[in-house]
Amino acid sequence: MNIGIFIYDKAEVLDIGGPFEVFSVAKRLVEETWNIFTISDAKHTIYARGNLPIVPHYSISNHPPLDILCVVGGEHFAMLDNERVLRWLRHCNDTTSITCSVCTGAFILAAADVYKAMPVTTHWEDQESLQTMFPQLDVVRNKRWVHHGKYISSGGISAGIDMSLYVVSTLSGLDAARAVARQMEYDWHYLGE
Image 1 (tube, rainbow, N blue to C red):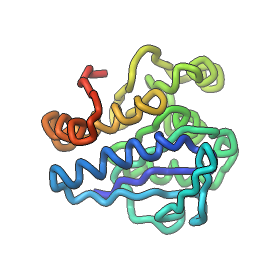
Image 2: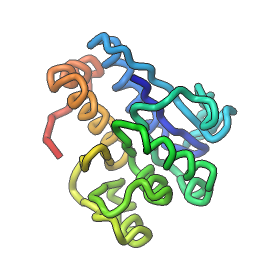
Image 3: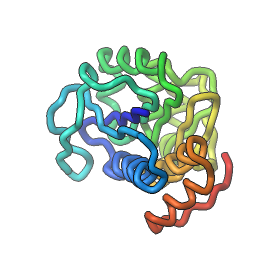
């Protein structure tokens, strides 16, 4: 299974690292044959929030086929007008079994017309803006993550870890997700959606 995490300049560090760590620990503990990697618009160093340099594994033009696509949040505004990225997201979504977002990654998937007329969530601070910009969405408040069909969206930062553990629970079982949380010393309580 190929799990691709889409990153870009000024993405939130924990939005990237949280899901990456959850899936990597799950791969090790549950002995899943998962390939976890990062993807950016072009294969060059991106600078996440706080100016942390990250070298992506792939670009949007040379990555393996995706089973799971995760779009992270951060200062996302440049991505909303990047037609090359939006086209790529639509194309990937055609074949993924799970498409998910952390935080303001929901804006990017909505701009790509991947999230449409469905319940979604994002960081509490951005929920009103998401609803205003994309009125066809049903923006859910007071939920760490929202699951609708193959789409899963989460609130910000630590909520992305919660959502990623939920993804592990759907793929490998609740006991596996709890084992990953314990290994990470992360206080995760499966609360449903």
